[in-house]
Amino acid sequence: MTSTRGPAGAVDNAAASTQADSSSRASASTVDGQDWLGLAGQRVLVAGAGGIGSACATAFADAGARVAAADISPDRLSELDDRITGLAADLTTPAGCDTAVDDAVNQLGGLDVLVHAVGTNHRVPVLEVDDGDWHRMVDVNLTSAFRLGRAAGRHMVDAGHGRQVFCSSVSSTLAHPDHAPYAATKGGLDQLLRVMAREWAPNGVTVNAIGPGYTDTVLTRAHLDKPGVRDHYTSLVPAGRLGTVNDLTGAVLFLASRQAAFITGQVLYVDGGRTLV
Image (cartoon, rainbow, N blue to C red; front, top):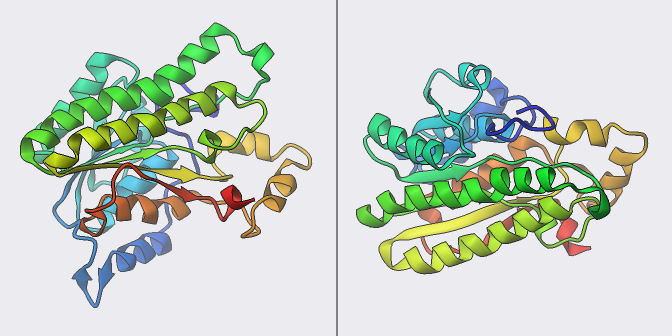
């Protein structure tokens, strides 16, 4: 998607990782040459082929997983790593979500991991939010998560195992001005994943999310580049910098791994300490 989002693309974030980043991710998933995360051969569907989605898909491929990524944009699909299967799908529709999951199962021979990296935002005060903006953000950020999680959950519950990882936000807990619809969708997402986690835990399925803080992405860059904004946000982060897309991929891989088998219903904040202050 662009920074204002199309109807069903993934989060438009920073460009995909460099070769050095890929090597770093690959080594992080192994210890003394062993597959510490247990991701080799895992069948992964990433919903969204934009910045976060593309980076996650590449990180899984680096870890030896078999990966498909779904998106409405032919351009984003064409830019995916050659190891990743691109699936054309409108993720704002029920049929598009079901088709994306079914196609991934058919292409990969099953489904072990779902990563939901689809989202949009439009920064305006509450009194300036129109119904169209509200419904668009709910459809992209929350309803697509429900539909994809439900479709993937059917396969995972039947199989007796699975991992689902969603992209939430610090805005689900912090009351940022001009973020009302976005914050509402992320708060709703957090509660949705808790209920799914509770229902599917007996079937070996875990459901978690990462909660990015202030992150420099294509989606946020126009706002960050306004006079004083980048410096202001940086001053609010105890770590002293904004996040990058590559800060997020390690957390996603961990939550999707065998090492996180006893973690479910949680949001892992990747925010440099922003939620501490």
